[in-house]
Image 1 (cartoon, rainbow, N blue to C red):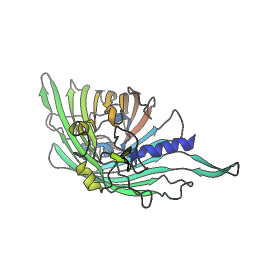
Image 2 (image 1 turned 45 degrees about the vertical axis):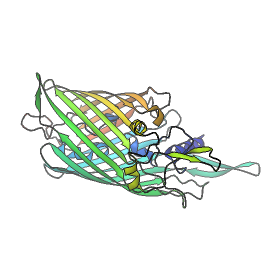
Image 3 (image 1 turned 180 degrees about the horizontal axis):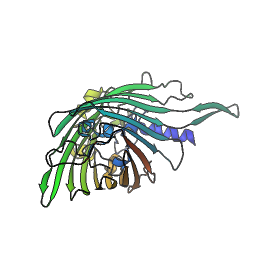
Image 4 (image 1 turned 60 degrees about the vertical axis):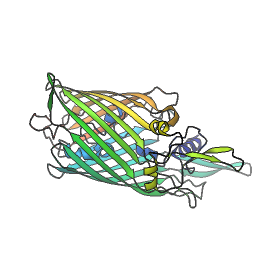
Length: 395
C-alpha cells in the first residue's frame, strides 16, 4: 500500500518528465510541497496571504510584509498532516524566525520539511517475497529573506531558498536526489488609516514572484523538472468598527510561471499524451504567459483565485473563512475553508479546516491544521491615525 501511495505521489509531482495522459493539460512541477500552505491562519482564509497583515509566517506568502511587522522578533511553528485518512506519517513541518533590524528593515529565515513517511519495499524473487528494506523519502527547503521599507507605506523584499528533494528509492538505481535554489522578489503596500463612512479603514496590496530558479535533475539524461515558480497578486481592506472589532476582506490570484504541457504524437500521429517543453527556467517563465495551446482562455484558466474573511475581536480572538477556486481543466481544486485564532499574550494558536467542493478529493480534506506563533517581545500592536506602518490586526 505504501509503495502505491509513493508511486502515486511521484506521478503527481511530475517526476516522469512531466509527461501526462491528461487531455486537460494540467501544469505540473517538481517539489509541489512548496505550494502547500504552511500556516493555519492563511489556510483558514482560502489559502491566501500575499496582502494580509504581517505575521510570523510572512516568509511563505510575502517576505516584504516583515518590514511592517509590529513585534521585534518572533518564531512560527506549524504542522500539517497530509493524506491523513490513509496514513499517519506523511506531513509538512515548518519553522520560521524573524527579527527586525531597525524601524525600516527586517530579516527572516525558515525551514520547511516534507516527509513521505516510511515505505517498505519488497521484491518477488524465485517465488518468494524478499525484503528490500525501508526507505524514508523526504524534501526540504532552507531560506533567508531581507525586507526593507522604502516609504511609510511601501516595502520590498528579496529571499533566497535552497531546495533539496530526496525521492530516490533502492529499487530504482537510475534516479538520485536533486537540489536547486530559488529566488523570491516581493513588494507590499499598506495605506495610512482613512475614514470610510462612519468607520476607519486601511487597504493593503502585495505581489510575490517566488521560486525563481533552475530545474531539478532526478535522472541523468532525462528531462529536468521545473520548480514551482509562482506569481501571487492580492489586495485587502480592513475596516475598524471600533477599538475592539476589525473585519478584513481579502482576495488573491495566483499563476504558475512554468510551461503548459503540449501534445506529443507518435509516428502515426496518434496522441501519446502531453509533455512540457525542454527549455530553461527563464524561458519557461516568459513563455508561460502565452504558450497555452488553447489561447487566452486557457491561459486565464491557469489562474487560481481565492477570497478570504477575517474578523478580529480585541486582538485576542479571530474567526476566518475563505474559498479557493481552480479551473476544472487545470486541477479542479475547489474548497471552502474555516479557521480560528487565539492570541494568548506572547503566543498565538491558529487552527483551520478544509471542506472540498470538487469531485477531486483534496489530500488535506477533513484535516485540522495547526500553527503556533511565538512573539519574543511585547511591542504594542494598536494602530493609530497618525501612522499605520506598524498595524497588525492578524490573528
